[in-house]
Each structure stands twice: as structure tokens, then as C-alpha cells.
Image 1: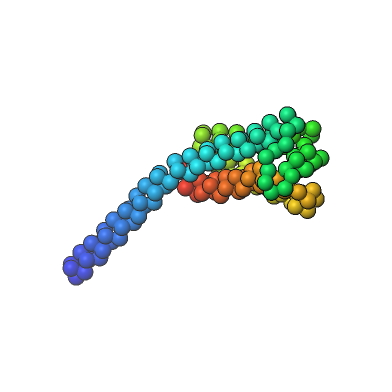
Image 2: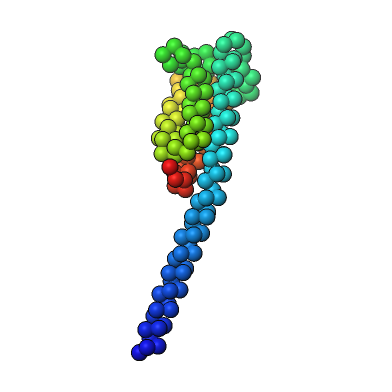
Length: 163
């Protein structure tokens, strides 16, 4: 009987050791992934600021956007390119700047909520391009793709990051 109790005790110790190792492994993985996701978000945000900045520059200078898909001018000068009299590219710059800052200060829950709004708004704008304006702007599509990527990475950060 003593042998049975000793064997059960040893087996429980081994199970506890395995559980502790798995917990440490998950913690280590989280610590190594979090900075990568954070930096990825910051790079995506900078790319988004560059895209939105270029679109704003073109709007200010009334110069044609360099575009290979269709005349971006049609989209960039449509009535839908303004919200409350402000060019959407300004909102884009502000959105990407907020993403960058929220990633910098590790506010992942707020960042995720912000990215959900961004994806929904981008989906609406893409709908307008395809079904209302009937013109496509590669810069607008690039911004929408960046926003979807920001959403995906922010979801990963929400899962692996700690606020």
C-alpha cells in the first residue's frame, strides 16, 4: 500500500511539473510575440499615415494621384471624400496616428475597439467605391487593407498582450 501511495504522489508531482512547464512555455511565447505584434502594428500605422498623407497632399495641391487601377481622381474628388467638410485623408492620418500611439502605450483593448471601427468604416468606403462611385482608388484600397491588417494584429495582441 505504501508503494501505491508513493507512486500516486510521484505521478501527481510529474503532472504538476508538466503543467508548470506548459504555463511557463505559454508565458514565454506571449512575451516573445507581444513585441513583434506591437512593432508590426506600428509599422502598419506608419504605412497608413504615408498613404493617407499622400492622398491629403494630392487633395491640397489638386494634383492627380498616381494610380494604375482606375482614375483615383474620381474617388478622391467625389462628394464622399469629405466628412463634415474635412477630407477623409485627414481622418485617415488621425486614425493611423492613434493606432501608433495606442500600440506604443500598450492599450490593446482600446486599440482593438478602435480597429473594429476602422474596419467597419473602411468597408463602408470600399462599398461606396465599388457600388456608388464606380471607381477604384489603389490608395484607398491600400488603406483598407492596412486597416484590416491592423484589426487582425490588434486581435492577436488582445489575445497575447496584457494591458
